[in-house]
Image 1 (cartoon, helix red, strand yellow):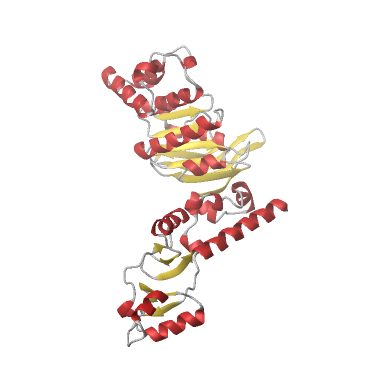
Image 2: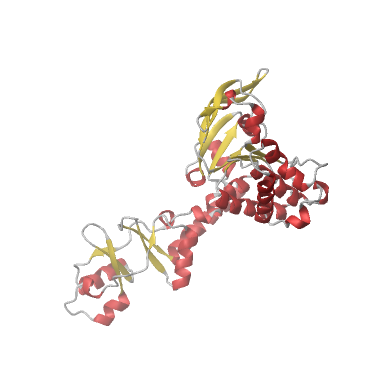
Length: 378
């Protein structure tokens, strides 16, 4: 959808952007973030030709934008900024319908219908707001109108430059949730600039972290949290950020990796002895290919006695389990709902991967808490 190839920007002797190359997929939500002066807003402005690169090229749908007429290009790219940019002398309706009417590719009736639909979509009553002026709206309401105006152009791309940074925390959180829901429905290509990592993590499919005009890492949220590319990225994100974002903590991160397991061909007597020597009250059962096929507890062994039973005869063949890529929130939901103290972990190929117990969970979480306390004291 959008591709930047070897983009550099200089102002005098100062390098603002230094050889930036990256791709933004259609329908994705990409956030640019970094310290002040890193080049994130400059990158955004290059995409709609508000400024020109010193070298390199930007492509939209495979076409170089250097060859595009700037006015025509901007009419097809929504642009939302911190100061909102609504025309104060125009009503809300006139602000929204200005570009669609200039483009002349829709009838007045079609434009009006689209305006009404978008107003309802963002939770603003058209009858109440369309004939008001921007000064009569709150900051949060104005910001919603700014985005409605961007969407009303039928733009596939929307550029947003710190749109919520001037709002109070409650309004900002509400608009973040609203924007996320709107993107889920519309699937626009959104390029969003912020200085707030919490905001980036809430909204982004991918995040581009910049410093001194260079891309430090451009990656999915999960990869950034798990595998920061360098010390700057690690420090910028925060060393404990993964643990404050439990949906990115996977079963594989917290499971006991070598749980006590046995083959189903073992006898009951052998199973009891394995439990005794390993000081456990359950056994995970697998076949010769390490496929997880069941679980047996000390209670089940005692109930069935020590006759010539094999574990395969009396084990639970439909036990609860989680996958190794299930996250911490999902795991806790299952364990609390079913009121169980342990749960096997398997791969998507049904291979036994590990075991999660309440005690192992507490151990991992308390270790992380202690590490965080030590880092604060240091």
